[in-house]
Amino acid sequence: MGSDTASLAPVSPTASVDRAVIEKKHISLDAVNFPAIGAFRYHSREKGSGDSRRFFKIVSTLQDSYRPVSRYLNDVLKMPQEDTPNPFEKLFFGKIAWDGYSFQLNQEISLLISFSEGCWEGSCEELAIFVSSADPEECIRDFQEEFYVLWEEYANEDDENLTADAMELKYKILGLIKGVEFAGENQ
Image 1 (spheres, rainbow, N blue to C red):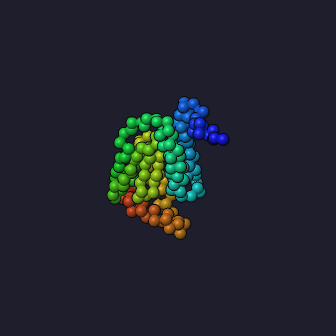
Image 2: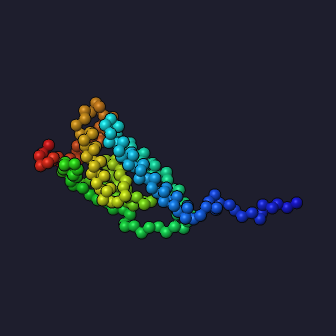
């Protein structure tokens, strides 16, 4: 007696699902990114929450975890990739301003901005600052805010209250800053 399995067509887990439904779920998958980032960014600014860099590493891991699925769906659905501006741009800062403070730097620091999977990401490896947002301008603002937060958290903290990594970051930041002004007054 012969096998009837040869006449069966291969079955995909999404074979019975309408393409429009799959595309809608794919869009939802991309959107997972933004609420997670917002939650971690809020938590990282709470008093006593610890080192905010740790939260951005978590956010980065979350983003990386859904990218392979997103790429697979793009391939399976033959979805066209969006036309985006140059995906990588390196910006240099000699001065950073945030919340009324203006930091004049001894040397320029760079922020690499890239577009990946529908999201703008900014990274400053030197200071371990990683931000993610809906547009490049917001990446720049988030970077300036993170610089300020690092300065505020570490600059005046006693060394004995800091871990070795935090102390290294503290002196890196202090070494970069030539001067700080607030509302026109030098500090």
